[in-house]
Length: 365
Ligand code: GN1
Ligand code: MG
Image 1: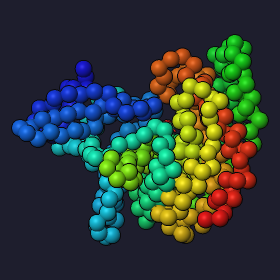
Image 2: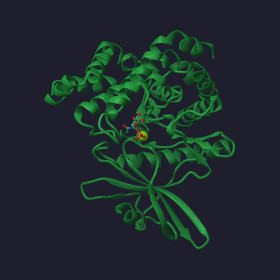
Image 3: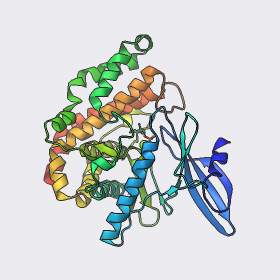
Image 4: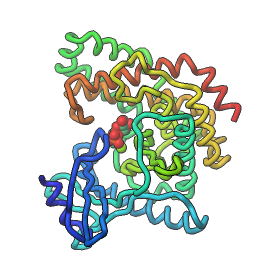
Protein backbone atom coordinates (compact mmCIF):
# COMPACT_ATOMS: atom_id res chain seq x y z
CA UNK A 1 0.00 0.00 0.00
CA UNK A 2 1.36 3.40 -1.02
CA UNK A 3 0.13 5.11 2.17
CA UNK A 4 2.43 2.81 4.23
CA UNK A 5 5.45 4.03 2.34
CA UNK A 6 4.34 7.64 2.73
CA UNK A 7 3.83 7.14 6.47
CA UNK A 8 7.42 6.04 6.88
CA UNK A 9 8.59 9.41 5.51
CA UNK A 10 7.24 11.34 8.50
CA UNK A 11 9.21 11.97 11.69
CA UNK A 12 7.29 9.68 14.03
CA UNK A 13 9.32 7.65 16.54
CA UNK A 14 9.13 3.84 16.30
CA UNK A 15 7.79 1.53 13.64
CA UNK A 16 4.48 1.52 11.82
CA UNK A 17 2.20 -1.16 13.28
CA UNK A 18 -1.00 -0.66 11.27
CA UNK A 19 -2.45 1.66 8.73
CA UNK A 20 -6.11 1.74 7.68
CA UNK A 21 -8.57 4.02 5.87
CA UNK A 22 -10.25 6.31 8.37
CA UNK A 23 -13.31 8.56 8.60
CA UNK A 24 -16.18 9.30 6.23
CA UNK A 25 -14.75 12.16 4.15
CA UNK A 26 -16.20 12.72 0.69
CA UNK A 27 -13.10 14.30 -0.84
CA UNK A 28 -9.63 13.41 0.46
CA UNK A 29 -8.18 10.00 1.33
CA UNK A 30 -7.61 9.68 5.06
CA UNK A 31 -5.73 6.95 6.96
CA UNK A 32 -5.05 6.24 10.60
CA UNK A 33 -1.51 5.04 11.26
CA UNK A 34 -0.41 3.43 14.53
CA UNK A 35 3.29 3.62 15.47
CA UNK A 36 4.96 1.68 18.28
CA UNK A 37 8.13 2.86 20.01
CA UNK A 38 9.06 0.52 22.88
CA UNK A 39 5.99 0.64 25.14
CA UNK A 40 4.71 3.89 23.59
CA UNK A 41 2.06 3.91 20.93
CA UNK A 42 1.20 6.94 18.80
CA UNK A 43 -1.75 7.31 16.44
CA UNK A 44 -1.45 9.74 13.57
CA UNK A 45 -3.60 10.87 10.66
CA UNK A 46 -2.14 10.62 7.15
CA UNK A 47 -4.01 12.38 4.36
CA UNK A 48 -3.75 12.58 0.64
CA UNK A 49 -5.15 15.91 -0.53
CA UNK A 50 -6.67 15.60 -4.00
CA UNK A 51 -5.32 18.20 -6.38
CA UNK A 52 -8.32 17.92 -8.68
CA UNK A 53 -10.37 19.40 -5.81
CA UNK A 54 -7.74 21.65 -4.18
CA UNK A 55 -5.78 23.15 -7.10
CA UNK A 56 -3.04 24.50 -4.78
CA UNK A 57 -2.91 22.13 -1.80
CA UNK A 58 0.20 23.93 -0.48
CA UNK A 59 -2.16 26.74 0.51
CA UNK A 60 -3.98 24.41 2.88
CA UNK A 61 -0.73 23.85 4.72
CA UNK A 62 0.06 27.57 4.77
CA UNK A 63 -3.34 28.26 6.33
CA UNK A 64 -2.99 25.44 8.83
CA UNK A 65 0.32 26.86 10.05
CA UNK A 66 -1.19 30.35 10.39
CA UNK A 67 -4.25 28.99 12.14
CA UNK A 68 -2.29 26.88 14.62
CA UNK A 69 -0.03 29.80 15.49
CA UNK A 70 -3.10 31.94 16.01
CA UNK A 71 -4.82 29.30 18.17
CA UNK A 72 -1.70 29.01 20.35
CA UNK A 73 -1.60 32.79 20.86
CA UNK A 74 -5.31 33.03 21.65
CA UNK A 75 -5.33 30.08 24.01
CA UNK A 76 -2.23 31.19 25.89
CA UNK A 77 -3.94 34.55 26.51
CA UNK A 78 -7.08 32.98 28.00
CA UNK A 79 -5.09 30.40 29.98
CA UNK A 80 -6.35 26.86 30.42
CA UNK A 81 -8.77 25.81 27.70
CA UNK A 82 -10.19 22.51 26.52
CA UNK A 83 -9.76 23.53 22.85
CA UNK A 84 -7.46 21.19 20.93
CA UNK A 85 -6.39 20.96 17.32
CA UNK A 86 -4.53 18.66 14.95
CA UNK A 87 -0.88 19.66 14.55
CA UNK A 88 1.42 19.22 11.58
CA UNK A 89 3.94 16.36 11.84
CA UNK A 90 7.03 17.16 9.82
CA UNK A 91 8.73 14.79 7.42
CA UNK A 92 12.12 13.29 8.33
CA UNK A 93 13.71 16.00 6.18
CA UNK A 94 11.91 18.78 8.06
CA UNK A 95 9.15 19.60 5.55
CA UNK A 96 5.47 20.13 6.34
CA UNK A 97 4.31 17.79 3.58
CA UNK A 98 5.27 15.53 0.69
CA UNK A 99 4.38 16.57 -2.83
CA UNK A 100 4.04 13.88 -5.44
CA UNK A 101 5.53 15.20 -8.71
CA UNK A 102 2.63 16.95 -10.49
CA UNK A 103 0.20 15.23 -8.17
CA UNK A 104 -1.35 15.13 -4.77
CA UNK A 105 -0.08 16.39 -1.43
CA UNK A 106 0.47 14.06 1.52
CA UNK A 107 0.57 15.31 5.07
CA UNK A 108 0.57 13.89 8.57
CA UNK A 109 -1.31 15.33 11.55
CA UNK A 110 -1.48 14.47 15.23
CA UNK A 111 -4.59 12.54 16.24
CA UNK A 112 -6.85 14.34 18.72
CA UNK A 113 -6.92 11.64 21.43
CA UNK A 114 -9.79 11.04 23.82
CA UNK A 115 -12.42 12.45 21.47
CA UNK A 116 -14.56 11.18 18.63
CA UNK A 117 -16.96 12.35 15.93
CA UNK A 118 -20.47 11.30 14.87
CA UNK A 119 -22.09 11.45 11.46
CA UNK A 120 -25.61 11.63 12.95
CA UNK A 121 -26.74 13.70 15.94
CA UNK A 122 -27.04 11.67 19.17
CA UNK A 123 -29.04 13.92 21.50
CA UNK A 124 -30.03 17.51 22.30
CA UNK A 125 -26.83 17.82 24.37
CA UNK A 126 -24.81 16.74 21.36
CA UNK A 127 -26.48 19.43 19.20
CA UNK A 128 -25.75 21.99 21.94
CA UNK A 129 -22.07 21.01 22.08
CA UNK A 130 -21.74 21.17 18.30
CA UNK A 131 -23.19 24.69 18.38
CA UNK A 132 -20.89 25.65 21.19
CA UNK A 133 -17.80 24.39 19.32
CA UNK A 134 -18.72 26.39 16.20
CA UNK A 135 -19.34 29.56 18.24
CA UNK A 136 -16.01 29.04 19.96
CA UNK A 137 -14.24 28.57 16.63
CA UNK A 138 -15.72 31.85 15.32
CA UNK A 139 -14.67 33.63 18.51
CA UNK A 140 -11.13 32.22 18.25
CA UNK A 141 -10.68 33.39 14.65
CA UNK A 142 -12.42 36.72 15.22
CA UNK A 143 -9.16 38.67 15.34
CA UNK A 144 -7.33 36.60 12.72
CA UNK A 145 -6.91 38.91 9.74
CA UNK A 146 -8.47 37.62 6.51
CA UNK A 147 -5.31 38.80 4.71
CA UNK A 148 -3.27 36.10 6.51
CA UNK A 149 -5.31 33.26 5.08
CA UNK A 150 -5.12 32.14 1.46
CA UNK A 151 -7.98 30.88 -0.67
CA UNK A 152 -7.65 27.09 -0.68
CA UNK A 153 -10.78 26.40 -2.69
CA UNK A 154 -11.70 29.22 -5.08
CA UNK A 155 -15.45 29.82 -5.34
CA UNK A 156 -16.17 27.31 -2.54
CA UNK A 157 -19.40 28.88 -1.25
CA UNK A 158 -20.12 31.20 -4.16
CA UNK A 159 -23.58 29.78 -4.65
CA UNK A 160 -24.25 31.80 -7.80
CA UNK A 161 -21.13 30.29 -9.41
CA UNK A 162 -22.52 26.79 -8.75
CA UNK A 163 -25.74 27.89 -10.41
CA UNK A 164 -23.82 29.09 -13.43
CA UNK A 165 -21.93 25.79 -13.58
CA UNK A 166 -25.26 23.92 -13.28
CA UNK A 167 -26.60 25.79 -16.29
CA UNK A 168 -23.43 24.99 -18.28
CA UNK A 169 -23.62 21.33 -17.32
CA UNK A 170 -27.29 21.20 -18.35
CA UNK A 171 -26.29 22.39 -21.79
CA UNK A 172 -23.83 19.53 -22.16
CA UNK A 173 -24.84 16.33 -23.95
CA UNK A 174 -24.26 14.01 -20.98
CA UNK A 175 -26.63 16.00 -18.83
CA UNK A 176 -29.22 16.07 -21.57
CA UNK A 177 -29.05 12.31 -21.80
CA UNK A 178 -29.21 11.84 -18.04
CA UNK A 179 -32.23 14.08 -17.68
CA UNK A 180 -34.04 12.22 -20.44
CA UNK A 181 -33.58 8.87 -18.72
CA UNK A 182 -34.29 9.62 -15.06
CA UNK A 183 -37.42 11.17 -13.60
CA UNK A 184 -35.61 11.77 -10.28
CA UNK A 185 -32.93 13.75 -12.15
CA UNK A 186 -35.48 15.81 -14.07
CA UNK A 187 -37.36 16.61 -10.87
CA UNK A 188 -34.11 17.55 -9.13
CA UNK A 189 -33.26 19.93 -11.96
CA UNK A 190 -36.70 21.55 -11.66
CA UNK A 191 -36.29 21.77 -7.89
CA UNK A 192 -33.22 23.96 -8.35
CA UNK A 193 -34.67 25.98 -11.22
CA UNK A 194 -37.68 27.00 -9.09
CA UNK A 195 -35.34 28.30 -6.38
CA UNK A 196 -32.56 29.79 -8.49
CA UNK A 197 -33.58 33.36 -7.57
CA UNK A 198 -33.06 32.79 -3.83
CA UNK A 199 -29.54 31.42 -3.93
CA UNK A 200 -27.51 34.63 -3.79
CA UNK A 201 -29.11 36.42 -0.81
CA UNK A 202 -25.94 36.32 1.31
CA UNK A 203 -23.58 37.15 -1.53
CA UNK A 204 -25.65 40.23 -2.32
CA UNK A 205 -25.72 41.28 1.36
CA UNK A 206 -21.93 40.99 1.34
CA UNK A 207 -21.63 43.16 -1.78
CA UNK A 208 -23.97 45.76 -0.20
CA UNK A 209 -21.67 45.81 2.85
CA UNK A 210 -24.33 44.45 5.24
CA UNK A 211 -22.44 41.24 5.86
CA UNK A 212 -18.68 41.29 6.34
CA UNK A 213 -16.15 38.77 5.12
CA UNK A 214 -14.52 36.87 8.01
CA UNK A 215 -12.47 33.74 8.55
CA UNK A 216 -14.77 30.74 8.27
CA UNK A 217 -14.33 27.00 8.68
CA UNK A 218 -16.14 26.24 5.43
CA UNK A 219 -17.19 22.69 6.33
CA UNK A 220 -18.39 22.62 9.97
CA UNK A 221 -20.73 19.66 9.51
CA UNK A 222 -21.43 17.43 12.49
CA UNK A 223 -18.89 14.83 11.34
CA UNK A 224 -16.14 17.45 11.84
CA UNK A 225 -17.05 18.24 15.47
CA UNK A 226 -14.95 16.36 18.01
CA UNK A 227 -16.65 15.36 21.25
CA UNK A 228 -14.78 14.30 24.40
CA UNK A 229 -15.37 10.56 24.95
CA UNK A 230 -15.63 10.86 28.73
CA UNK A 231 -17.47 14.14 29.27
CA UNK A 232 -19.53 14.45 26.07
CA UNK A 233 -18.30 18.05 25.77
CA UNK A 234 -17.22 19.60 22.47
CA UNK A 235 -13.45 19.67 22.01
CA UNK A 236 -12.73 21.24 18.61
CA UNK A 237 -13.50 21.35 14.91
CA UNK A 238 -11.32 19.25 12.64
CA UNK A 239 -10.93 19.18 8.83
CA UNK A 240 -9.40 22.64 8.57
CA UNK A 241 -8.68 22.46 4.81
CA UNK A 242 -11.35 24.97 3.86
CA UNK A 243 -10.64 27.54 6.58
CA UNK A 244 -10.49 30.70 4.48
CA UNK A 245 -12.21 34.08 4.15
CA UNK A 246 -15.96 33.61 3.79
CA UNK A 247 -19.35 34.46 5.28
CA UNK A 248 -20.12 33.34 8.84
CA UNK A 249 -23.83 32.57 8.15
CA UNK A 250 -22.61 29.99 5.63
CA UNK A 251 -20.79 28.17 8.45
CA UNK A 252 -23.81 28.50 10.71
CA UNK A 253 -26.09 27.16 7.99
CA UNK A 254 -23.83 24.26 7.10
CA UNK A 255 -23.62 23.18 10.73
CA UNK A 256 -27.39 23.56 11.25
CA UNK A 257 -28.32 21.58 8.12
CA UNK A 258 -26.21 18.65 9.25
CA UNK A 259 -26.99 18.76 12.99
CA UNK A 260 -30.76 19.29 12.77
CA UNK A 261 -31.42 16.51 10.27
CA UNK A 262 -31.76 13.53 12.66
CA UNK A 263 -31.55 10.99 9.81
CA UNK A 264 -28.15 12.26 8.66
CA UNK A 265 -27.02 13.27 5.18
CA UNK A 266 -26.34 9.69 4.04
CA UNK A 267 -29.83 8.46 5.02
CA UNK A 268 -31.10 5.91 2.49
CA UNK A 269 -34.73 6.93 3.08
CA UNK A 270 -35.54 10.51 2.08
CA UNK A 271 -38.92 10.26 3.84
CA UNK A 272 -37.03 10.30 7.16
CA UNK A 273 -35.49 13.69 6.45
CA UNK A 274 -36.62 16.48 8.73
CA UNK A 275 -35.34 19.76 10.15
CA UNK A 276 -35.86 19.23 13.87
CA UNK A 277 -36.54 22.55 15.62
CA UNK A 278 -35.77 21.18 19.08
CA UNK A 279 -32.32 20.19 17.89
CA UNK A 280 -32.01 23.60 16.27
CA UNK A 281 -32.87 25.33 19.53
CA UNK A 282 -30.20 23.31 21.37
CA UNK A 283 -27.62 23.99 18.63
CA UNK A 284 -28.47 27.69 18.58
CA UNK A 285 -28.26 28.03 22.36
CA UNK A 286 -24.83 26.41 22.28
CA UNK A 287 -23.72 28.70 19.46
CA UNK A 288 -24.99 31.92 21.04
CA UNK A 289 -23.39 31.08 24.38
CA UNK A 290 -19.90 30.94 22.86
CA UNK A 291 -20.09 33.40 19.93
CA UNK A 292 -19.39 37.05 20.69
CA UNK A 293 -22.47 39.24 21.08
CA UNK A 294 -21.30 41.66 18.38
CA UNK A 295 -20.79 38.90 15.85
CA UNK A 296 -24.06 37.21 16.67
CA UNK A 297 -26.03 40.43 16.32
CA UNK A 298 -24.40 41.22 12.99
CA UNK A 299 -25.24 37.83 11.46
CA UNK A 300 -28.66 37.25 13.05
CA UNK A 301 -30.72 38.70 10.16
CA UNK A 302 -28.97 36.28 7.78
CA UNK A 303 -29.11 33.03 9.72
CA UNK A 304 -32.25 31.53 8.20
CA UNK A 305 -30.91 32.35 4.72
CA UNK A 306 -27.61 30.78 5.70
CA UNK A 307 -29.32 27.50 6.59
CA UNK A 308 -31.51 27.55 3.48
CA UNK A 309 -28.69 28.54 1.10
CA UNK A 310 -26.20 25.99 2.39
CA UNK A 311 -28.69 23.13 2.23
CA UNK A 312 -29.77 24.03 -1.28
CA UNK A 313 -26.18 24.69 -2.36
CA UNK A 314 -24.99 21.27 -1.14
CA UNK A 315 -27.91 19.59 -2.93
CA UNK A 316 -27.00 21.52 -6.06
CA UNK A 317 -23.33 20.51 -5.76
CA UNK A 318 -24.30 16.82 -5.44
CA UNK A 319 -26.63 17.17 -8.42
CA UNK A 320 -23.97 18.82 -10.59
CA UNK A 321 -21.56 16.03 -9.70
CA UNK A 322 -24.15 13.40 -10.58
CA UNK A 323 -24.69 15.09 -13.95
CA UNK A 324 -20.93 15.29 -14.52
CA UNK A 325 -20.35 11.62 -13.72
CA UNK A 326 -19.22 11.71 -10.04
CA UNK A 327 -15.90 13.47 -10.52
CA UNK A 328 -15.84 15.46 -7.24
CA UNK A 329 -17.59 13.61 -4.38
CA UNK A 330 -16.47 10.02 -3.83
CA UNK A 331 -19.28 7.47 -4.32
CA UNK A 332 -19.75 3.84 -3.34
CA UNK A 333 -22.43 3.21 -5.98
CA UNK A 334 -23.82 4.91 -9.10
CA UNK A 335 -26.68 7.30 -8.38
CA UNK A 336 -25.42 8.04 -4.86
CA UNK A 337 -24.84 11.73 -5.56
CA UNK A 338 -28.37 12.08 -6.96
CA UNK A 339 -29.73 10.46 -3.82
CA UNK A 340 -27.55 12.75 -1.65
CA UNK A 341 -28.96 15.72 -3.58
CA UNK A 342 -32.52 14.58 -2.80
CA UNK A 343 -31.70 14.30 0.92
CA UNK A 344 -30.66 17.98 0.87
CA UNK A 345 -33.68 18.99 -1.23
CA UNK A 346 -36.12 17.29 1.18
CA UNK A 347 -34.34 19.12 3.99
CA UNK A 348 -34.64 22.39 2.05
CA UNK A 349 -38.41 21.87 1.84
CA UNK A 350 -38.60 21.34 5.61
CA UNK A 351 -36.51 24.48 6.22
CA UNK A 352 -38.92 26.43 3.99
CA UNK A 353 -42.00 24.99 5.74
CA UNK A 354 -40.57 25.76 9.20
CA UNK A 355 -39.23 29.22 8.38
CA UNK A 356 -41.47 31.07 10.86
CA UNK A 357 -40.54 28.79 13.74
CA UNK A 358 -36.82 28.82 12.93
CA UNK A 359 -36.82 32.63 12.74
CA UNK A 360 -38.75 32.87 16.03
CA UNK A 361 -36.12 30.70 17.75
CA UNK A 362 -33.34 32.89 16.31
CA UNK A 363 -35.03 36.10 17.45
CA UNK A 364 -35.89 35.04 20.98
CA UNK A 365 -32.27 34.34 22.00
C1 GN1 B 1 -17.26 17.41 1.64
O1 GN1 B 1 -14.76 15.76 2.48
P1 GN1 B 1 -15.74 16.18 3.45
O2 GN1 B 1 -16.67 15.07 3.72
O3 GN1 B 1 -15.13 16.76 4.67
C2 GN1 B 1 -17.30 18.83 1.09
C3 GN1 B 1 -18.23 19.72 1.90
C4 GN1 B 1 -19.60 19.09 2.00
C5 GN1 B 1 -19.47 17.70 2.58
C6 GN1 B 1 -20.80 17.00 2.67
C7 GN1 B 1 -14.02 20.43 0.14
O4 GN1 B 1 -16.62 17.42 2.87
O5 GN1 B 1 -18.33 20.99 1.29
O6 GN1 B 1 -20.46 19.89 2.79
O7 GN1 B 1 -18.59 16.91 1.77
N1 GN1 B 1 -15.94 19.39 1.09
C8 GN1 B 1 -15.41 19.97 0.01
O8 GN1 B 1 -20.68 15.85 3.43
O9 GN1 B 1 -16.04 20.10 -1.04
MG1 MG C 1 -14.17 18.70 4.52
